[in-house]
Length: 360
Image (cartoon, rainbow, N blue to C red):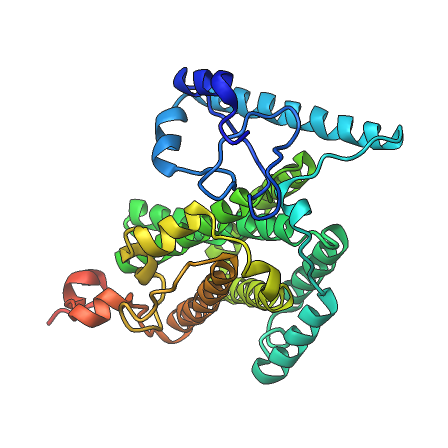
């Protein structure tokens, strides 16, 4: 059941992308009905970035968009069929995340946020518009993802990459115009995006993107959020960084409550292979770069089970908070944001920031 049989093997050999989700072996061994199954060694959805590069080769916008549209159309039909089947008295097909039966107490997350706000006053010091958008977003997430933490995390990670897309886009534009050249800042933001990408892939491995409706909501919200941040970064980089700090703090609080609330269950489930690839077997240069407030190589997290994975993600989110705070200080007070490598090796600021040095 994990390999999709001979037909599944033929499909993969023909270069067809096999997108599947199966229940982890720690929970059950039955794949979703009607899907070819390609799993890692623990039964999670298999994700291999090298293979994705081979199968998802570059093409025109019409080709890529057409394939995406047809894939999502099939997903919409599948979800609607499930809903009709339930109305007729049938049973709903469950994804990995639903079979795992994780819980998330939203009230405790709000309590954690309130306690943190008393100390930092970050929300209170934000603009009225930022506060309103942030609070409405939190209420919306609590309403839509009741007892569905993994799809919630998948949406959060999809949207969480948008700030770094936006910052990189604007910084590239500034460099193209010759207005401003700060390559170190671009490197840090790219490393942040690379980290959030792997959080997203971990949630995909856990079946967080199983429902068409969740994918539709996440992708459209991401596009809107991207353009809001682009405009905000044009007008006020400090405001944009501060809002991202709010969002990253919320993500950290949510992950912390989740791994504490589900600790016993999480420790019985092995880590997806994509998590091990990133935290243990991968190139850790990019992992270090975005942690601007930590010494080089100070974080080398273990990844023995799913509990470790979520603790690691929580730690990453806390590092994002520190980096966003440092970026905000950079825009307000001119304190340079430096990656751990730059601080450790003592690179020459005159070479890194030639447009900011004074000439005699």
